[in-house]
Image (tube, rainbow, N blue to C red; front, side, top):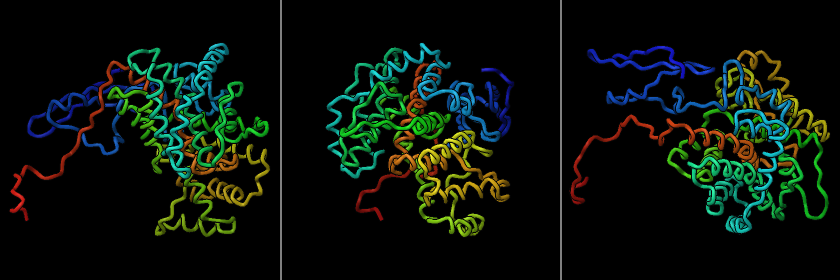
Length: 431
């Protein structure tokens, strides 16, 4: 870390402490408060919104400008010029692969796409109408019971093997969740297909006839995975790191990340977009809905517009916008009532001064929800697909943490506001 000076904290009568200031390669400087605990005081930061919990070299976000970099590469360039396997290699290894390195990596991942045959029995223990994320949390966590030959987290080869297994098997498990929910037979992975094409095959193929999705659809799905591959220290990534800090095995850590992603405030945004479009119902109802959005006394929220992190245009959104229109053209869906409604909302948000002034631009969730629905994927699977794309980010963050000599088991502190000491009375004297 680059030293940027000293911050002095003063309190009480003559009490003070000097805290070093460090600068990163990009982004704001940080004050190192690790020595503060020796004074008997701690910082109070609900949600850790002003706390850097780790050093990382993986992803950088500048929400004010609208930047997202994976290992220094702008997300727009990666989505345009690379496929998801190249992005996976980049996140895991720090550099984009050569053609030979890419092929070697793809081959390694492909050797792990199948799941243990006994795992198939796990699905029969779930109700047919179980939410796919509920099933994924259980089945991904159970992988450690079948692949315990690579659970030594201090062994770099074991970590690499576990990473490859997770990247390979989570799509298989996600597709199996869908098939089980629909009462369809499981389709085994086809390793001659690309990563995105193989997932679509496992989702939508049948044993009765050949299945070959169009290149436009495959590329669109590949971009969805790339755009969701990592997003710095968000709730699910922080969960993976916190679980991993205890020494938990990687399968358990990724299962914890899936559970955190399941929360509607995190991974359910694109599902919420489709729900809101359905509630609006028709293009003719858009003006009335927009009027409600602008009414500060109305509690309605416009889903899929603006972003908690990005105070400017979400850099992923423009890529997904182009992809969305490519998919709608390919499938001839521009006349679908729901898609016409979505396009009208997009038009208003990009031209209406109210949205422009408040920087309420359509975000990646707005477009990805539309694309996933166009592909025939039910909304209950949206977050599961988010997990497929994000798995490589979780694994990369977990691997980086384990290799960091400064990592410690996570132990946030608290500001206690409960009862002070009191004595236990006999039960007959308690009022």
